Image (tube, rainbow, N blue to C red; front, side):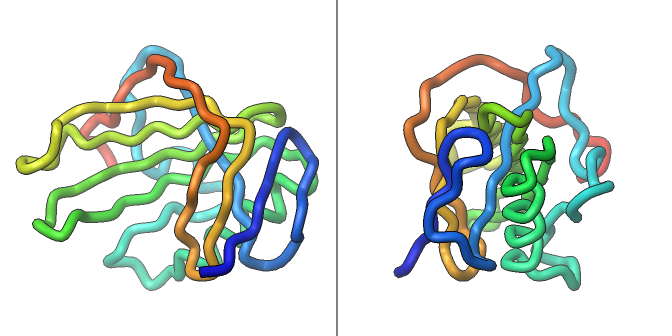
Length: 143
C-alpha cells in the first residue's frame, strides 16, 4: 500500500491528496467527539463522509500550518468502538486512542505525541516517531 508522509510542522514530503495530518489535545478533561468540526468533519462509519476526503482536508490544513483537530470513530472486528483524535497544534501531532468502550480490547486510553504521520490512500493513518504521554479519554457526549 502506498503511503504519504507528513513530518514536523509544515514540512511535507510526497504531497498529494492522500496526505493527512492531525493530532492531540490534553486539557485534563474528557474529550468530546466532534467538538472541533469547524475546519474538517469528524469521521464516523455511519456518516456519508468519506475518510479519504476528511484526511485530505487535514492535509490541506497542516500543509498551510494551521492547527486542526480530527476525530475518528471506528470499530474493531468484534464491533468494539474505538475513538481516535488527531490534533495538530502547529508543531506536534497528538494522537489520543480511546479503547475504553471495547469489551474485548485492553480498555485503555493511549496518548502519543508524534513528529510525523503517514496517510494511506484510503485515509488510514500511521503515526511515526511517537513517544507516549498522558491525556484524557472521550466522554460519552457526542458519540
